[in-house]
Image 1 (tube, rainbow, N blue to C red):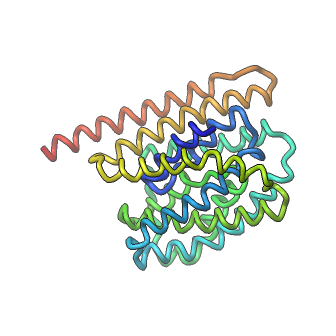
Image 2 (image 1 turned 180 degrees about the vertical axis):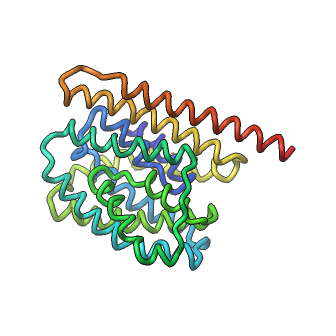
Length: 280
């Protein structure tokens, strides 16, 4: 578990999100949502708080507006998600649902999907947009891909983006923790796992922060993380779908996901090369 959390912490340190989106698909192969969600949530309370502190100087009126009007939806959704996790009885089916929601979001992000919402409209519908994200987080502690997709479409700079996504994730992680605690999902055993894995998490975040500062083409690194997440999620979907249907492993969902990602990756590489040539 420490190795997985170390790997997952690197994109979190670099981009202020990506921890659960990387860790959850890997951990769900062996564990259930009920087992890992409280652990990842508790870790993310500290990770997200640290990211807010690191990016606080980058806040602007626009990023603050997106955060304020997005918090109500994400907070209420997180509580509902925590409750759904509590009452879930079919672990394999819940995993299939999580993977089925996560994979399209990752691929849309990899495809560079953009649809900007004006601030005036965001003030009216922001909480509706973030509500399903909160539900997903409460069930799986995953919210990075959908939040990144939403916030990237608001025309924020990279610095503003980091502050907004960190602030929203602080709200959802604290709300979800209170839900887990109230519903009895959180246990003292969580503290044990957090304690023994904390050195790996801290080291991974530090490497991520350092990598983000020295790497010239951050988008290339981020795109590589997306491919990794989509491939792992594709395997997780195949593995658990097989359990639900009654087969050992159904490989075709994984093959389809990998094929789509390779297509999107090839388009990204061609576009990237063209941009580099124009700059040179």
